[in-house]
Length: 472
Ligand code: BG6
Image (tube, rainbow, N blue to C red; front, side, top):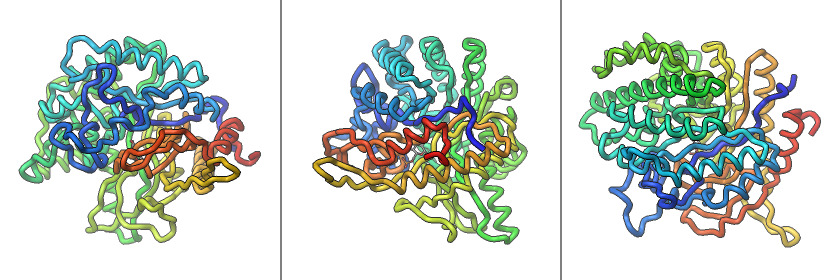
């Protein structure tokens, strides 16, 4: 038992959920800047005066990243995952030349990450794109985005290639189905019927697959030492009963996600999606070379987020959330106030399934507990007693250790939101994941003060022990 010597312990955030400074440094508006209540809400028509948009200030990482990364160093982290805001580099996506101020910000950020003893793991597009691209082209539904993304990738790979060796293309690409605006910049609410909606979704996915393959190719040609991974959301899904219909329905739900990783890791459209698209009348517009490109440029590793599990009952509608698909509650598991069921063994199962399917290295790019934390005053000091978070991580770490003992190659574990950030799902601040509390509420009030929670010291020690929880 135990974790490999070079295991990458760390934390993960996304630019739009922490940076703020939405109009500074030449940044253009992004799709997240017009959302008030997270990825399931509809965007407002442009920025409406007087309305509150959580991404505009977020937790002000843009100005406070040095302070925050110092705390990450104290956690003994080896890796820090963040994303590049596309609209910081190309404000509308259309410019011929990149925005130097935006590039400089990430130059400084990656330097700081290194100087704090961490490797950056960089998502090229985490639930965002320049707003202009969504409005003009309906996001990834249009093929026009492929060369624009290629240009963006070439810029960041050229500029940061010496500083970043771990890359991810799109965050949770399989959420194109369930949160199409955030994951692909498409407005399915503008589709006139279900068939049109499905056409948009699959077309966007196809264009993103081509863009992903081009990014992999570019990375391999330009940076032979670097790795380009893909990133999916994989929650655990179980049949609600042993009824064969429930088992089959579960399989179909799993295939909705496997579709994405099959294309990017195996390099081909799987048979089950071809059939599904045919039945739904989807006709992909593609170019001759697309499939060859996809076949020849598969991702180097598979990263994924895992928060919880759910159960599937045939005939009962499922919904999609940031934590993955949601069906029926499992009576054997505890549930958070946000309805997420805590299931460490589910993580072990997902790791085993993914390794079995692809046989390539896995990276846990997100895992964590969103909870309502309370600040209490003790001997004149602000304290946050978050034992529930310690318990959550402890149990998940043990599950990962067991998977590693089974022979699965896990590269690392990035805890989601190591300091409190804006929730992607709801736009709230009060759904907190951090080891560091940030004083800000759902309406945007607060001093932005950073306060260590009890879990901070515990996590720092766990990482220092390379995950040896027995010695804690
Ligand atoms: C993942 C996303 O789906 O879940 C993150 O990649 C997100 O952006 C995380 O923040 C947790 O979800 P939420 O809704 O609790 O912020």
